[in-house]
Image 1 (cartoon, rainbow, N blue to C red):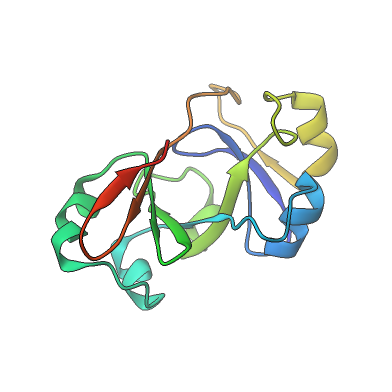
Image 2: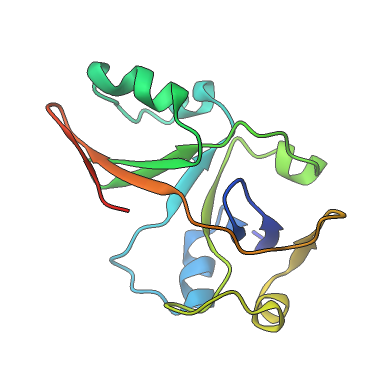
Length: 143
């Protein structure tokens, strides 16, 4: 699978369905999981991620928010995608397009990505998504 550099719903990111390739690219610990981004709620349901009933409405209404349930991080990005290549994925792993603990550097990203998708607005760093860890009883904001 290819690694794609694109403007995601939150910030500039690398996306791919190959988790191992992303780990090598970012020199990331194998213990730290990636966010799995789904294109719609049907895809999330098909992935068999069980969300506690009391938080389902919150997840449906959330924008630019990542949730962690039983050590699985996921987000539903319903924003329209401009590329046919991205529309064909029902899900993909996503990570920020930078070296670990550093800011966005275009030259680093262009060297690492197989495919670059850029619209007329270009690639620009924004704030990352909110991050909530949820279980059967409560939710806790992590970021």
